[in-house]
Length: 48
Image 1 (cartoon, helix red, strand yellow):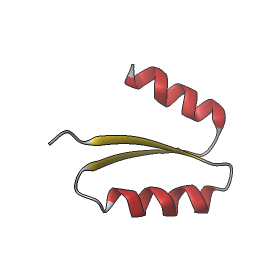
Image 2: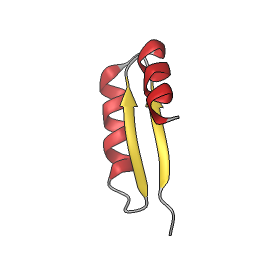
Image 3: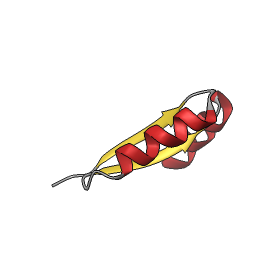
Image 4: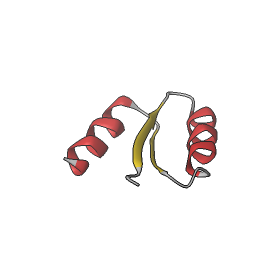
């Protein structure tokens, strides 16, 4: 089964980290977390 790749972006670091941890507990979900818009754009560029 293919893994679902999720990028969590939120300006509230604790919320983003908590959501990423909850999603990462699922066996078919791969999570990356970014705390800001610019960090999210860099993560997307690396993934492309």
